[in-house]
Length: 419
Image 1 (tube, rainbow, N blue to C red):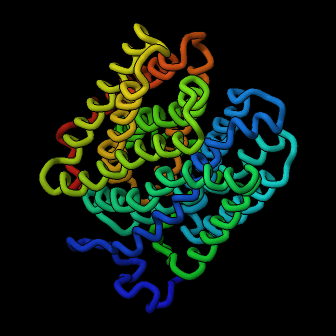
Image 2 (cartoon, rainbow, N blue to C red; image 1 turned 120 degrees about the vertical axis):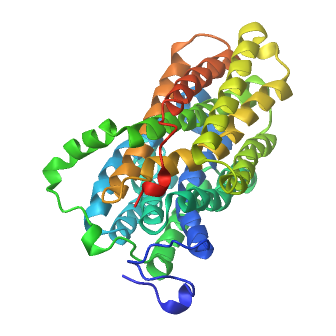
């Protein structure tokens, strides 16, 4: 299904792959809006966790389990949408996922039971994750490997506004309304995504490039992907590096608000600063990809993250909660900002050689990422130590392993050979 010509004036035919130096920037930015539903859903309600905990009569740490519940939906939802989009195209899955997301957001907004909320959050994720899968695959359908890295950087510029603004926006909602209003807003944003899909998203997967292998072979196809080192090393390595961010998301409210007594408003500002660093380095990444190899930039970013996480671990080990808050925040800032150099490039390398299974590759990459997020959340609960050391252990462990895998990628890998 093609969008009207007037809505995308520089749109090529769906079957035409962009090879020129020019990128379809307006289209990529629109994809960023679709993907933004994910970070909005994760980050906007974080300042509300203490007040939600009071309403439900539980602790903030218990209510924070709604974050891993969301990640659980992301893991399994992406594994479904990937092969589904490779078979039927990119448009239909968006309609299905966004409709489910709107319904789930309404459930979250109207419930008075914490367990129903957890189920609603999982359903929210099952719907929201379609955006990440389909947009990454659609970009792979149209662009070359180097263009893909630039496109992901542009898309993050748009979707990156969500984690910058979301906590502050959530705090504003809490000032004038109850926490329920946050989920009503998310339902409205999901409706906006349905409208963007209807009027501006066109089909990028041509009939000849669709995966026609039997559905019963899905598991074997995923296994084949994992055995493909051109995919597995950057996908798993990048997922471990990104998973450390989800560790921070799961623990941020407890660490910053409960431990250091920061208000909901100031928490939003601090959270937004980290997201701003992430977005800033994704834009620097566009400039760097014109001058350096994608793999070299990826390795530099991975080292930056590991060193920052290592310093945070040492601070937590020797100072604990007596550590000066700005020092803790600086370490976290560089851990998160470094993702701007690792995520666009790891994704570009992982998808570069996956022409007929781009949807599956995108889905598996995302599922691996959020599986790490769930595992990281479990790590946080395993160590009966101070909150600073707890997050330091989890982030340093995940980032070290991710960096190791990134350095296993064949340095002679030629992305220009990717079709």
